[in-house]
Amino acid sequence: MNFSPIAISLLFALLSPTLLSCSGDSSTVEIESPPTVCIIGSGIGGSSVAHFLRNYSVSTGLDRARILMFERHEVVGGRMRTVTVSGDTFEAGGSILHPKNYHARDFVERFNLTVRLPTAIEESCAIGIWDGKKFIFKTFGSSIKFPFVDKIVSWVNDLYMFVRYRFSLFRMSSFIENTVGNFLKFYESLESRPIFDSVEGMLKWSGLYNLTKLTLQEKLSEAQLSPLLINELVTVITRINYGQSVLISGLAGAVSLAGSGGGLWSVEGGNWQMAAKLINHSDVTLHLKEQIESISHLGNYYELNSTKGNSFKCDVAVVSTPLDEVDIQFSPSISIPKRELQHTHATFVRGLLNPGYFGMKSVSDVPALVGTLEDPLIPFSCISILRKYSETDMTYKIFTRQPASDSLLDELFSARTETVRIDWGAYPKYHAPEVFAPFILDDHHLYYVNAFENAASTMETSAVAEAKRSINLIGDGLLQLLRRNPKATAQEQFEKSAAGRAAQAQIQQMAKQSANTNKGEPVLKWQMT
Image (tube, rainbow, N blue to C red; front, side, top):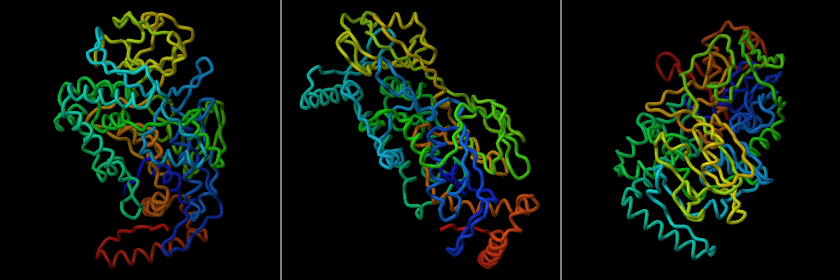
């Protein structure tokens, strides 16, 4: 079996025998008592679980489930967050969406949110690559804001980049297009593709798995990109988007490169609104500032205990937050590959950059986006202008791998009127070959949405969900559970119910058909329509 990241999550929330609803001949078997589904984390992953559970399981009766959601912070959104600098709002976490992020686009349209396109300063052609002492490459900007002038400047920059990087630019573009094309297979019709129960299975089917076995540097070298392009432009992009070098895995690197193209967008007022809207429209009982400290499987249910001393009983538990830095005690214990998160320190400064730091006489000579090479002596990954109020007053965003000290900021800026610091455990530290955590953390109904993050971490990959296909997995997963643990208390209760008797009769009929077909041990598949 195979399933996609959040499709999994929905499936996860649906596998319990106490919440079975199935269909082998278009009839529906419903249960009298809907289950309780507990979701830990209110980011795009957890909110998508609730959304798809509510909206794509009507035929199963699971849309009536009681959904509890726990968020340790005081606001929803997970790693989608905004900051306010001098009254202006800026993205501090997940900032951009790709034009082919179809699920995110659907959320925006569904809830009448407004698409925000990059501002003129954010789209500025002026990009510089800083080696710690000088700009080794710098494109041209334009202070004349007319469309035809911008177009001419863009053409000049394209030519300038071609002179430096030659045909490697086209090879890089082809590499990105091939990766995006393979990812788009997950949007194909449900009938044309299988369902997945592991990250590896999903990636192998889509043709993306091999990208996780080698580093981005190795994959780009295979694609015949020049070392100059890899060490300069590609390095700048990976340091900006994932805070890491070209030694990250090839798939994470390809996703990073895709996030540097055109047509990028965000949600006006903050991307976190997607999660908020999904939660608000999913009839969720939301517990803010409620951190779960333990999850225990107690026979036929889970007990969740919080740091507030509260206890919650759940039929299904869905973990939708990275387990790398949260201290949740599991009983029985679980086993997942050890992983570290890459922290990105985002510092927002209103003031004026110091041109002398870059060997310039005027701040206008400093590019709107300053990227850097992979050098431990360079104290920042990038600096970009977010808003320009005047020639001497702007708001900047700085990414660093370590907290930006006041002494560093005093070197970088000639004036600072406001400074806001954010520390994000933003994404995994990517390696090659990658090792993936399981989607199912035990033999019951404890599920881990973030298992996919070791492939790539974006808002869209956290929200990729094929809900109806996930529902097809319910019966299959349940059947395996029945055969594996026929004496479970919950199973006994289920078998005694009218729904259980009807389901068992249907299983037996399917088993006979399967046995006749396969001439041996029945291979049962439960189809949901």
